[in-house]
Image (cartoon, rainbow, N blue to C red):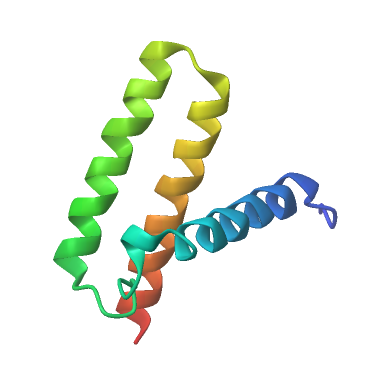
Length: 84
């Protein structure tokens, strides 16, 4: 059984870094997944998946990684929202 998950740790760190980045964005002030409905989160997730697809079509590795993290963050938000 694996005990070292460096890839997961790096991905989780990227997720956290992206959340901090978004939190500092003036356009996002006052908007939190904690106050969003599950439907709003689902719509945002769909939007992020579309952006990820665009990044793939552009063959932009940096953008693909960024959008993969955004998708994962919305999945986390949905998971958290349903646990409350």
